[in-house]
Length: 286
Image 1 (cartoon, rainbow, N blue to C red):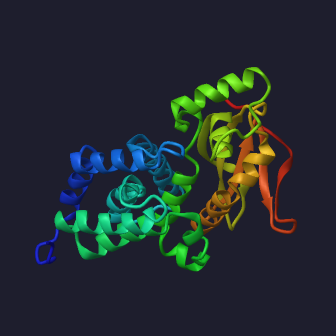
Image 2: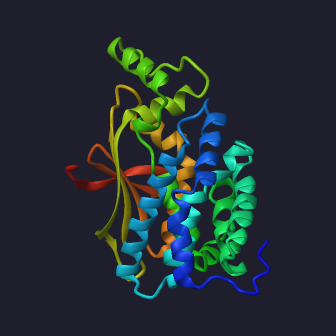
């Protein structure tokens, strides 16, 4: 049990975060959590690595535009640890995995002698990464917690057809061939269909979009979507809370948030409370 009389320094914490990525205890928990989540899309350690890599990209981009906005502790420890551990609680409770994961993160990091402040911030990232909890946090509070905003965007913007479980992906391929892919045939089918329809997902920071004194540009989720499986309107409706979370997180970091579907970029209209295409804006996906 960590009494914080001899907490780790930054180099030791960074080393422990690296070791965490291959720690058998963490890998086992992710495997158990994914098995318990078998009715949903994959929430395995592969998802954790995807969120980690996306969070690192956003961290680098934010640091380029706002040097000094993140402490070394936040950049090298809190963000990667929070990103990698965000779904670890599914091994205990799928429905309440954020709160369960908070306790796992606290116990795990405390046992490694991480400083109390770092343990608390990583645990808070894990506890608050779900949209319902995140959307209750004010923009002003988020400005003081950029680590959480970065991990939330990374988590909500990771996902494509590879997250659909093999048996359901096989069924959706067959249904698409006979023109029935838009029909829901099983529980959670809509989530499987929309993820299966996403053939490629990329997150980028575009400094040329919405660059104003208030914003450093746009954080853009670029998607290639098979609309024979799910239309863009369904994507925007089904994941409305997730994208709303991304919008609030981006704003707290000094950006706006965009979604680009098949080369058409969308912005959220606060007046109509709907996503609408940006006028005269079309960028070819690479």
